[in-house]
Length: 193
Image (cartoon, rainbow, N blue to C red; front, side, top):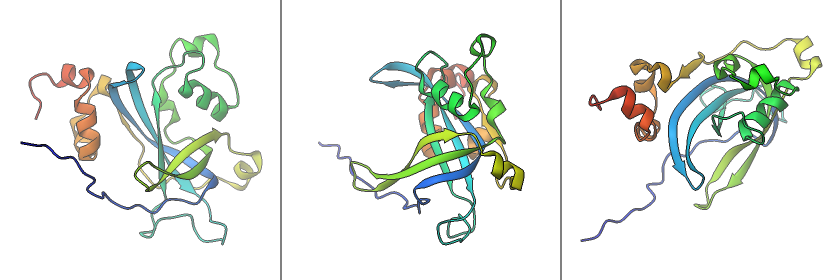
C-alpha cells in the first residue's frame, strides 16, 4: 500500500505589483507554538491591506475591487536580532525601550498604517508568491495628504483569549495549523471539534 502526496494546484491569486505600498495592518493571527528546524516557537501572522495606485494610476486592488492583502510570519519574540523586533523598530522608526521590551502588545498594530515593500518571488513549486521584504513608517507627505479609510475590519485571533467565532472564520488550512499547537490543545482540551 502507498500513500501519495501531490500538488492539488491550489487557488491562483493575483499578486500586487512589486514595490513600496501604503498599507494598513488589519489582522494578527496567533498560530501558537510551531515546530521548525529552530525548535518550537510561538508564531504569529501579520496581515496588511494595501492602498494606493499602481504605476498606471489604477486603484491598487484585486479583480473583485478589494484591496490586496499581504502577510508575513514572525516568531513572537522581541529578543535581540528577532525578525519581529527588527521589523517593528523599522516600522516605528525607533528602538524599543527597556519597558517596551518587557512586554509589547501586538494588538496595538491593528489599524496602524505603514509602508510595506513587497516582491513577487518564484517558489520551489514554480508559482509566484508575494513576500513582504520590509516595513517602514509612512512618509510625512503622505500623512499630510491624508490616510485612506481602512477597508477590512481589524481582527486579532489570540490563543490566550480564544474566540471560537474568529477561529471558525479562518481558512481550514489556518485552523489545521493552529490546531496542531499545544496552546490550542490546552485551550480546547477534549473539545477538539
